Image 1 (cartoon, helix red, strand yellow):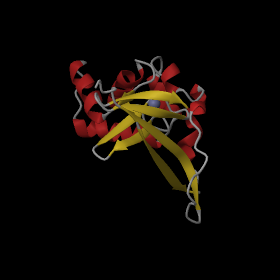
Image 2: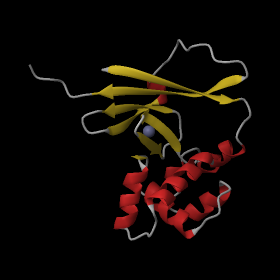
Image 3: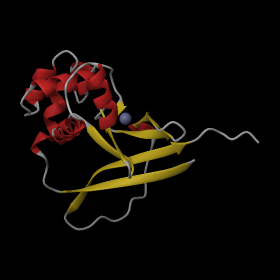
Image 4: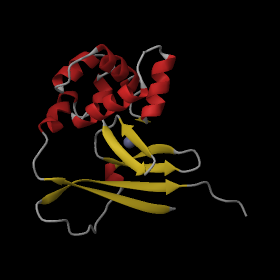
Length: 167
Ligand SMILES: [Zn+2]
């Protein structure tokens, strides 16, 4: 079991959108399935038909982790006519306003998390699946010095798991 710690340093200026999801008690997935349009408006995004359709798909299943490819496939199955590029852009727009958290687990894939509260992840390497670890269950007590004018936006811990090898 190896451990990878990603530290995201962000400029001190705060993002105006960061606290808009508070309307949903910081857990958009808990309230969104009911009113995606309202959630988008509250977050400063125009509730276009595509955004609402993708938002419904995203949040209908509670907390989860998706890639653009996964969501695009679900959209195709639900007969929502969107391109992969649109799905990708939409996921990034949702992330910018705080409705999703972006997770860079490895270089090749970007995961988006509907759970925007503080927590960490197990990555099951055998099947490339992410599972939540509640924030309180990990402590990182030695962080490197960060550059002047920056502050730590958040610390992501990914604990990589593989099945035990039987010898
Ligand atoms: Zn998560």
